[in-house]
Structure formats: structure tokens, C-alpha cells
Length: 295
Image (tube, rainbow, N blue to C red):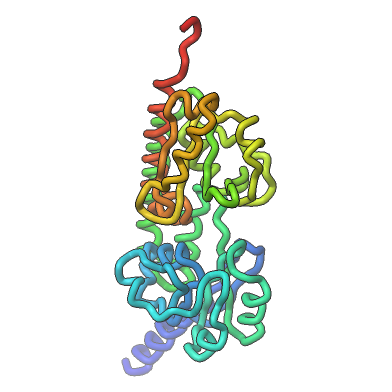
């Protein structure tokens, strides 16, 4: 009996400490001897994804502006996403760091790897990448059940939105990240995917970078039916109304100047669908304000 119990214990320990292998968005395989217990998040959206995947208790530090959920505000800070505090990260002895592919400095991420810290690179580009990322984070942290629940909920909600807005008349959209310099998103960005989900058409979808500066003249030539602004916080930015200086713009003539809080559209997390719902509602209003033929 003792031998049987010992054998069962060894089997259980083997399962509990089984190697974890997960592919990341940089095309690399991240190998851990067992599920991570000391995770450092290198982007606010990654922090939010980890909590959504049920791994919040395993996050030991995060970068600045990791403010959702509320528990994330109490995490120790390791610099900003654009300037990591490598010394502090090393002192915390994490068994995994989750990096943002297009946001973190590549040289600093490479240095973490040289320090022997496993790095998983996250770069969601499509709406479908969000539940896929939740599942992978759940595998890395040993919280697969919670991650699967969150991923499934996202997919069901996404499917409902897609069904609701399929077949809607396309509305041309300029998404304004910032006004000086004038910044927008290209087609290879999850915000552009959200615009498409709502039946919109990103007028700068041809841009090759996820986010780029554009000329004012380019926006005027594109003449979007709607302008969606983000800004830096929960309040509508004053500079959204600066477009009224060009009254011939379709978006201005029809009063289609809208605001969606940046945290709801610019973070690749389950809350992005909250932002998508606001975006879809704005574009539905814009459709109703379109000039009818013959009028």
C-alpha cells in the first residue's frame, strides 16, 4: 500500500511539475520546467490579460499604468513599457516575463533573455488573438480553466457583435490616437479590426505600421464620414473639435465626431469589446446621418 501511495505521489509530482511549452507571437517556443509562479508584466494590457486569465496572484510586478483591475494598481513597478528597469526585474527573480512585441525596447527584452529569464512575446493583432492569448497565458501560469472561461466568454460576445453588425453599410473612419503629431492606426492593428467588426472602413488601412503619423492633408483627402478620437483618459479630448475648422469634411458636416476611452480600444484585452460596442453605436448613428440620394 505504501509503495502504491508513493508511486501515486511521484506521478502527481510529475504532472504538477511537467514542462510547459507554449509558442509566442514572435514565433519562439517558451519552455518552462513547470507553470510560472513569479510573472512580470511588461505592458499594461498584458497585466490586464494575466488577471483575466486567472493568473493575477502570480504577477509579482508590472510596468507603470497597469491599473486594471484594481488589484493591479498595488503591484511593484519595474519602469515603463518603453523604459524597463532591468536591475529591479533581475532582483525580483521572475520565472517568466511577458513582453509586448511592438511596445517594449527590443534590446531590453533581449537583455532579459540573456539574464536567463524566459520571455514570452505577446503581439495580438486580430480580435481572435485575444482569446488565443488568454489560453496561452493560462497554460504558462497553470490557470488553464480560468483562462478558457474568459476566452470562451470573449468569443461568444465577439460572435454576437459580428452577427449584429454584419451586412451594415460601410462607414469610412479616421481613428485619431493623438493630435500632435497626428497619429492613427494601420490595417494591421486590432483597432482596425474593431472598426471592421462594426461595419466601418479604416481610411488608413493601407499603412504598414500598427501606428503611424499622418499628414493633415491626407485626412482631408480621405474625407472620412466619421472621426473617432481616443486621447489619454476618460474625458473627451478638446482637440477632437478642432476638426470643425474644416466644415466641408463629411464627419464635420454630419457631426460625426466621436470619442471612445483609450483603455477600451487601445488595450488588447477583453475590455476591447466594451470599446467596440461604443464604436459600433457611434457608426450606427453615423449611418443614420448619411445624406440620402436625391436629398
